[in-house]
Length: 417
Image 1 (cartoon, helix red, strand yellow):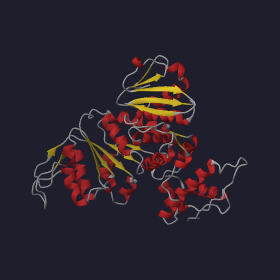
Image 2 (cartoon, rainbow, N blue to C red; image 1 turned 120 degrees about the horizontal axis):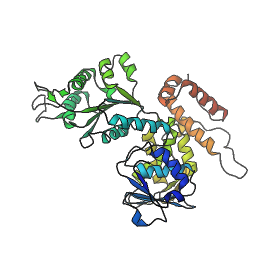
Image 3 (cartoon, rainbow, N blue to C red; image 1 turned 60 degrees about the vertical axis):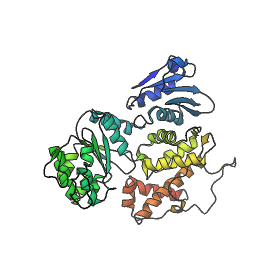
Image 4 (tube, rainbow, N blue to C red; image 1 turned 30 degrees about the horizontal axis):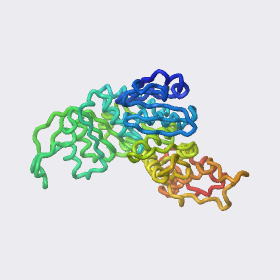
């Protein structure tokens, strides 16, 4: 396992979870090595970043410095391996367990060793900037700047000066010269996020900067040499933007040397549980005990449609930490999704109750959550199924199937068109 050492008793005590971790760890990377230890190992055999594993009836995570202790009840439970992946890689590299994500990370690591421009495609909130940062950190430019620019967040009138720099007095309000992001990133990496939002006039200047390795600041008469690796991110279909005349074909082909596609979170469900634990590690208040995530809560997270992708998952886990404050376990009741309940009508009849008196099965609750996400997407596009399916990252056929299954389950949904 890359970057992982094991103490004397670890393999004997935790062979099952070690075997499961091996397949994941072989495709993931971290900046600082970690030691896996059994609770019986002497503390002298561990380093500052060690994770101690223990078996117990009550699963838990106790943080200590850059490591901590992970107690798990079942080595084959999804929560056990998810918690270990999160503790190992959170803050050290991309957190993933799904084969699709692991293959993307392995490809990104190979690309990091080259100077090839990278185009990262994918819906908003799928982790494109995280992957871009990873490529920079694994490259020979790692000790140089990594500058991330959101092209949609900067007013069009300012974007040229912010990217390429300007001379003093070159426009009203230019009381001092500005170096611009290209020169600030010299020797390092410049991430151009949401590049499809860049005006056509600036696309031509960007193309020249890529081809010639130089920029011309506003008001300057001579170009300035820069050594910058470009990573571009797009949440739109760039070939379609080229066809519509909103994106330059020559710039697209210059950037599209080696594209990487980031899948929506719903299409890499094995990532959800590790990411959920990683979000808790990031947001648990200092000095507070970190709660475990119950199997029912993980099942609900795994089956939700995640229209907001990883960004929405982070919202849900921050909410769960707040709702479960003072408790040792995040339960299903603490999982509140971003989609509002008004998007789906509940059945007129009462929820089915088992003979034991327990409420509806988890599968029904998950189905309702998924229906809410789909109906919200339909609402946003005026009920147009094809557009809703595109927004959700599924086929129109899958959408029709889901709507039919909701009706059969007694969940009232709109017909769409």
